[in-house]
Image 1 (cartoon, rainbow over the protein chains, first blue to last red):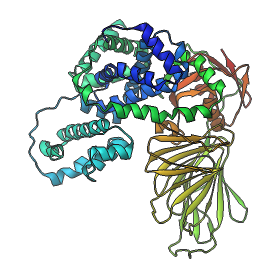
Image 2 (spheres, chains in turn orange, cyan; image 1 turned 90 degrees about the vertical axis):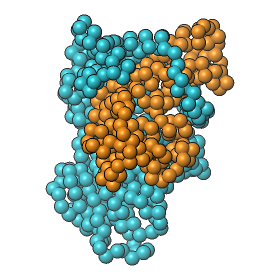
Image 3 (cartoon, rainbow over the protein chains, first blue to last red; image 1 turned 120 degrees about the vertical axis):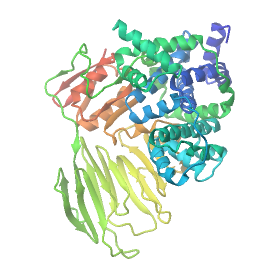
Image 4 (cartoon, each protein chain N blue to C red; image 1 turned 60 degrees about the horizontal axis):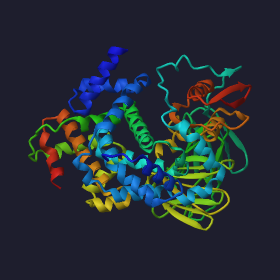
Length: 196
Length: 395
């Protein structure tokens, strides 16, 4: 997006406002990567970034009949995504639970030994850690690890994208890892999960 | 303030680089929780959007699936036909007001911003409470209003118990009722400004919102567990694959095996909504049926069989059950309808209905004036409380 073509983007918005899905896909492709990277920078969660991104474009699509009033498409799109990201952070600031998740994503992986240790004892701790996460994340994780469903199957079941499912699982693992590191000396336990 | 801004900028940099300590992280989020610092954060976001180059990980994202979710969950054509043309025009007018504005979240500990003009009022109005009227099979009624704990009455082999404040429970005696034996019917009605929770004989839980009622059998003996709802309820259905649970409301019915969902079916609202928190449900409206997935909301009107599905924030749909008003880009009318039912008041629009939209959340335990202050502080609308009526004026 080195050159910003205001005229042609306004034209695209005009087509979108008439319900032109092809034009909408062009705007989606034009902005998706930049918006995604932006949200990841501020949330440190790829899984949540997908959700916020999807929500951003959903807002654009739902409001498409009003898009002709927009003078500056890029500013408009950026405003929507900034506000959604801001709301996310603001929500996190009010929720211990969300903050713990964000913190787990911020923490760099500290090279823990990845030996398989004391799986038995730690199972309860893993359950404790899981119970701190949102119902949706718990559910996805359980479908993957306990029910043995593939990412495709989980995506189909939950209606989420495959990459979102994958990122949720990765981030849940990270969360458990950080949780276990706080609690005990059995740091490597999580390797069992990671190998799958 | 100046030095605080510097501090915040430093914390944001640390956070973006993933280099912050646990203390810095906590400090950053106290700033973020304070609306006074929104500008600093927004400015940093603006800078980031200007300067960033997409990372390599964007290639791992399943873009087609996200795109399809956007298109499908908005169910564009169907949704549109549910609204009148006027809606589209009104939305066009309001859009610019909405963007970048109207984010209010009230922290319980903090007083509302002082510069806000206080809503004109003669008497403040208190929030709703736990209250309900229970109608028994023989037509007699029991008023539930901080009733003492214990058994209220018996209905056949079922004991009706006030289990806790605002909770009534049906307990079937150990002796299981005969299949096909005659079931008694009870109705729990919630007035304006009320709410109540009900535990059905099968241990399913139902939260009922203001102006709502539920009719049900005092023991489920048939093949299906059937109840009838008007108004709004949140259901946590006990699993029983042999006996599907069916909620009837008007022309629609929702059929489930065991799951959590919210139904809003007020006769005076334009749209009825079924929102699924977990599990899966089958919704039938007239001749149309559709399966709803977690995180989806189905909406339909009173006149045709069209069902529109969209992805929603489930928390917003069940805000009332959690003790909040929560709005995401909600119209004036939608906001005021919720307020009206909980505070048991009338609403009068003076002149045109204000074309503003609201986003935010606040506890339902506040007095009415506090809620109105907050809505008013976003600009675009003025309120006056006269007796038990709120007058809404466009600004």
